[in-house]
Image: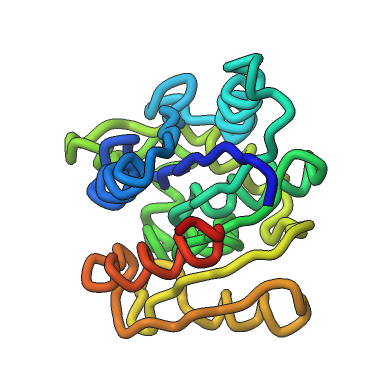
Length: 217
């Protein structure tokens, strides 16, 4: 394959310094490769906006002009998985391969199971709801985040070879979501692991598998 650029896209209530992101960045560095880890809590965690998150990836793509022609290989975790898929859908010529970790598809329809009926009503009525940020600090995320997200595709169409790693015990994004997604997309493969949403126990499998999928020796 031609030279490529690599990036890790973190999830909701996370940060570029998540354990998975740091671990993968270290592994890539030992291979002489840079794994970009953009800050996606844009414009802030409290005012989180999918459009602003996509714009952050746009800005990353526009950076390092000497590498502008190189396509991307993204690793996207949870909501970062949705983001990677959506950006690839919008810019198919810029993305060569994707690895998605428990991708947060169907987010708008899953909020009810995440926060409950009472939580949804409170979120709407108050205009914000408390969620832990990447450092575990409770912050009020505005209702506009839900409203904006509900208007976007819940399952973006990925245009390139894609591998999904998903925990069979994931209580945040049920594995049925990924099973359904791959069932109609022959260029997408699913690797099921005996793990939860954070995939803490599967990092070695994910790391070796990602390097192989990206053809990194």
